[in-house]
Image 1 (cartoon, rainbow, N blue to C red):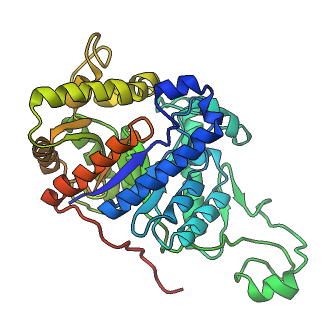
Image 2: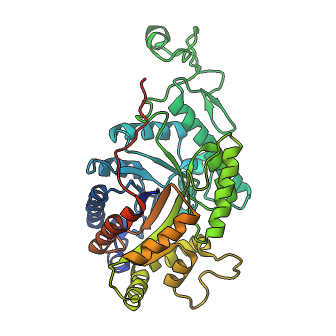
Image 3: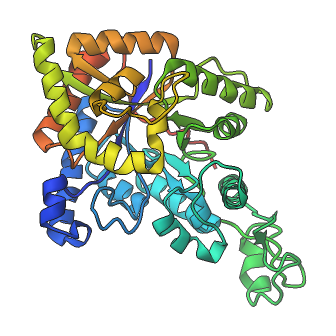
Length: 426
């Protein structure tokens, strides 16, 4: 049965606080409160047996909705407050990072957490920060439109991923690609002063030649988990992304609601895997993004539906309508064969999220039945719970994850287990 990952957006407060403390993103008191809340959430998730918790990478969010400019630092900090919970990101925006430096930081974090670490990757869709931080790499934000910016973004993403894997898996790292050379210049770095006295004796064989020229480098340390931490792709929804994930044995976390669309994407993943000689079953190596609102058994349908609408209006609408919809993410809620705007004019956001399958809601028993139906059709390895912590009040959020862990998960054999770090000798 699937493992459950809480996908948390470190928000500094709901809309009333965002307005009162504008710009709340630079409010130190609000940030400290968010960090304390994240510690509380992680400790609860750890005790309740959740598999992992993950955050985004976004910069310059003055609005305070996704304050996560240094997700690996956040992972390591929160990891010190937990014992079993795994920490990661969905995801690190590869085109705006130097691949060797990122590979090293990931390896160090993996050591700090002793294998309770996983890596999520993304291409970057927010122009406000990606265009600025990516300018020295000649890359911008993109949509999957096959345009020039998209092709450049995809090129850097793919090459940086390749370099990172080389850095993790090889003692001697060399690379000659379209945007990156190791060493640089590619014929070698001449006149390395300690070539004879230190590097030639104790460094990686082949790192320096008999003339004192650097011919390769070594990314240190190598990861705690071998060959590297588990790899995830953030919110895949395009055929190209699913094909790539299958080829590279990366777990996609799919942001799409209707089951026919999900099956179509999952089959593309299988085709990619088969092209590399892997033959997973449908759903194996796949993550499915969903939201959950759970109410106590005995709550009438009229009562919980009214409460759900209230919760969506207060905690979800600022994110889905005010943010996601503006970037095109509501396409994940489009029904099969549907045309026109999503949601439809006058349609309540709660109704659209439920009808598309992105949101599973109801009493404990209702949620069990709905989740059972989903998992029969889509036997995925991971459920990624889009959990808007910081927008949802702490008490209500903690009660929801407690209900899910204690009342829903046992029905499906979802339980915690010690981290399987994949550590090998050497």
